[in-house]
Amino acid sequence: MANANGTVKGALDYLEGHFGDFQKTLVELSRVPSVSAEGFPPSEVRRSADAVADAMRRTGIENVEVLEIPGVHPYVYGDWLHKPGAPTILLYGHHDVQPPGRPEKWLSPAFEPTERKGRLYGRGTADDKAGVMAHVAAVASYLESSRDVPCNVKFVIEGEEEIGSENLGKFLDKYKQKLSADFIVLSDTANFDTGVPALTYQLRGICQVDVEVRCLDHPVHSGMWGGPVPDPVQILSSLIAGLQNKDGSLNIPGLYKDVAKPSKKQLKRIRKLPFDEKKFKRDAGLLEGVKLAGEKGYSVYERIWTRPSLTVIAMESHPIQGSSNQIVDSARARLSLRTVPNMDGRKAGGLLVKKLTANPPDNAKVTAKLNGTTPWWTTDPEGPAFEAARRALKAGFGKDTAMIGAGGSIGFVQPFADMLGGAPCLLMGVEDPPCNAHSENESLHLGDWRKVMRSAIHLYDELSRVEVKPRR
Image (cartoon, rainbow, N blue to C red):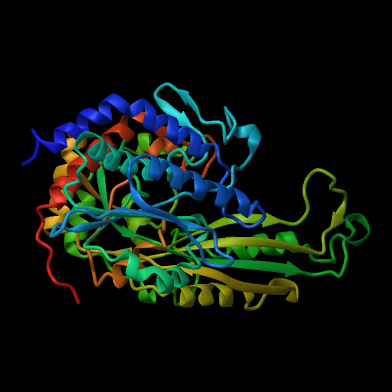
């Protein structure tokens, strides 16, 4: 590092001396139940935006404001732009979180962050308030130690990432002039393993389909009518089961027509990564004896990163509590289909709708509709910016950086990359495999969080020396 004995060292020293203060701020932010999903109070997401804005202002980040669009969960913006001639980095994160899930499954309350054995447990501690705070802390460490940052920085902290960034287009139309930058750095992805950093160069997309099976205009007695009267729950279950072939592939005609084949270079990257099946199962929480699923003929990483997959994320007819011996009138499910490069989310969702509604058993009334899509994203992780990021992560973690794909979706990435004319997107996050993001007992490995902060400090310095080429 060119400045290892100058501002970088000062920032690193400040971080080490004030890590506990940054952790306290993360705890404060994670106490706010900023669930963006429908059915939860929007006022809490607004309160979260205000809390993030206050945390940014306290660290010396300037021009902090809560950005508003009518009817949309608020974003937070801030910047430090005092480095003429230096590149500008757009730092992205999100402050909204997933619903807490089942309270009885949490070892400590979801919105009361609790430290146990080097991990901080609580909803949003890893996804993504720790990602936001990693960069806030890195910029603060520079400003507090030397009143200087190696390059210009802009923050945009989203408030609706967990519901698919459905209003991102409106946001970009209104604020795109404010968000111009030379590099995009995202803090919402996972590392390869605890203590092993990663750069993510591919994300799956997603489309969501709701399906309902209706057979009756009202529930009826299962003894008096059971047998000749069809059961909507069984029909729905059979429709869902019929979406998968015996080889693990999806039984949705036409779906694989647009699935891109990974390049030889990508397959080589994937196949050089170590894989420990026992550890993978343990990190996932699989019960003893449960086998891995998915398409035959593809490795686990290929299945997660390069192949479409289908998940039933909700199913309902009648709760067990209060149930009685009756055939219910209808049953519903919400299906989540992950898409990969070359697939069009709306087209894929349409194929799923067509499959579900064609020739239903017993001529049941089946309706299905596409609820929304988020695009996939991929890039070629080569060139000076990625080399700079690899050096920065190695400096922060002390280990080489794994180049990985991700099975999840981040709606922000492709639209922003397009808006900025193909600016390099560097996806480096704080999550590790056992973090339980989106599940109960979500947690952050505090040691890795510190390493991500250190890496961010090195990253700004590294990117300050990367030549910025004119873009389209």
